[in-house]
Image 1 (spheres, rainbow over the protein chains, first blue to last red):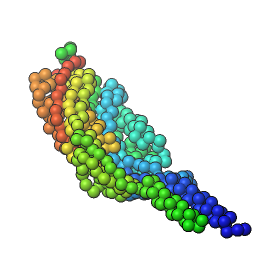
Image 2 (cartoon, rainbow over the protein chains, first blue to last red):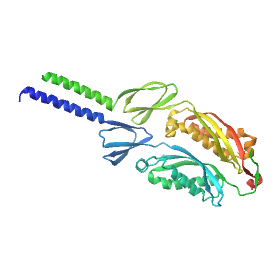
Image 3 (tube, rainbow over the protein chains, first blue to last red):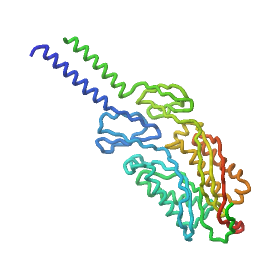
Image 4 (tube, one colour):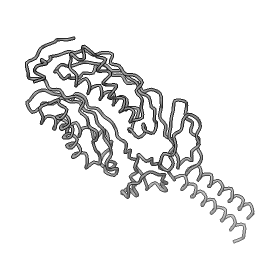
Length: 185
Length: 184
């Protein structure tokens, strides 16, 4: 082998090395996690850890970080009808916040953390409210709100979600007492 | 020949370094227009609030999160609410709120622009549900004042300022339980 052949071979090797390096660099992805987010890290499809705020490099496609937003998400449920313990037609409206309590569970158990949690809240709302007698007093409201929060959280905890700051904005039962009709004003 | 190869190799290495800067980080410019407010985050933590203008950030390590500071309009038509005396009221509400503290607003919700709707809806419903039909008929302004009084601190806590609020329509309908029965 002459010197020119070896030099040519080295040149090709250099090219291949730079090409491979460039491909690797092109595959580097960065994930930016703000302090109100958490990242759920998977390596080769398996969960490894929950990472906090910072900037992370993903050196290969087998590594992935799913972002989870830990900020509250507000919702209102208005005029949810039910029958109270005295079989009166009633309805209730609530406002509250859903927050992620466990980033790993919420990322792996729920497709959409918010939308998938709302049916659970609605179910807890109906179950707890129908045990009461539609008492609109502030103490009864507070007690009902606590009951709904506890019942919803018992269901939501296994999927890493939590219901907080629930307030009952409306509680109304069709009154059984004698009425004075005012008609339409 | 070897000299040429070395030159080409150096050129390729320089290209690779440039590629590293391109893919893995480099300075980027973010421009906020006059109605935008933002916060610069470095390594995930907020470092300073920024207003309109050009801001240089090291991409990958730094990020500018920005929000629209123009007023968010809230408008709901033909909502129904049960009143304290058993009657029902149909109402419409109209309001507007504006971001005052961008950092508070960013942390208040996954979608800060929904905060005004949420606060005004819940406060309006709470206040109306605690009112009687005669109270609403006689003094609608008092109900509006109560709603504003309740909504303002909540919006403030979320970084918003209430710009306007009114109840353009309240119609009361249905059966009313006599006041004496309510008191008993």
